[in-house]
Image (cartoon, rainbow over all chains, first blue to last red; front, side):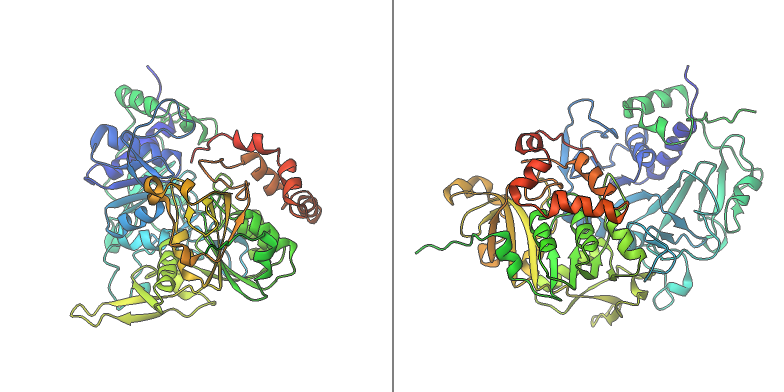
Length: 262
Length: 295
């Protein structure tokens, strides 16, 4: 029997995002969200379409890292097609922004002033379109007030539930922010007026610890808050099969167990 | 009657002038016309507006001080997510920018390709894309019963487009045999002058269009000139002919560490001729043997 790691628990938590999505393109940016798509496709929702991160849909989930065996492709996911597909709304992405605020607005462009940034990062990529067309979820490997910030993000790449930015007072039709998985907890937007609320705490984590590491006030989904599900032995075996390169063991420092040492 | 669009990289750059808007095809670390970009670095052309799904093409042009304005949705080296020369240019405030969503960028190219002033979209609503100092986005109201207010993405009209393809004939019939053609067709339609570097110029019969038509990028009337440039996309990939050179990319990233490091990179890999470049990056056999990267 193997002990579940925090990475395993995060993968299982991420997988819940796509559980009831039906036949959509599932995109997980970064190894743990990507393994989350793989686990969701394997355990819950075989209708999901996942890619090799480059240009093709895989018949089965394609492991992060080097190829360890033959891969069967089932479709074409060149960028033109991906844009067309996402404009149709049949996609659910999980992304890892650098900054994120109480509205669910997210930033990967710049820290500081846009004309002369303190730190220039990637650029908005596909975030603006994604955010108002198809469902989005989030992953933060380091839950902190540097990532989940007070105030608003420095450059809004993803639209959020911020009425001040709505056009003609109406939220964008496709705005649909789902879950937020971090190294401490799982959250959603189910509080009053889409307030971010904690829905489960990872084993050994308290609400106060989560709140202290978050720059905006959080709601509770229940009192007391449930514990995030720790993967069972069967689930761990599936996760291990989906990640033959062990990429998941490299994400968190020292690859800690899911249950914190007392 | 035959015609021949072959020319040298220097001939292409000779067609450029200060202040032009130049679109560059490919995507991040994939199929960038790098030999043409390096030729721009060796020229005295300046004050360019560069329109690119950016990778080391943008970084090199920034490092050499060629960029006045950048139109982009990202600049990235994929395996090195942050492009160091682009970052330095942004953080010094030395370049103006129009930052777009990837799909909005596509829409601007498509508007230009269709000779339309704009195309409507919802993309940008709710974000700071619409609140930049560099451009005042406008909205339009649907004239139909829905009456929806939409963003008017302006045409990204180019003066020149530079792209890289695997094969062409002398007439400019191009084959892009990579798995993803990206938006090179739209770049080719958004500019009155289009120059393509190609791995190899072959006869029209050797293009075998009956088999390869799906790889034909655009009708040759759009193509102004062809530059035969083997490994002309290096260090980016021109899969299936060769893959991304991650080792060179590391050298390139390290060239941003100091002015001295950039000067050394420039001397070794930019201020050289094609044969010297190929030797400096390890030779043809080594490049053909580069492993396929995973994304």
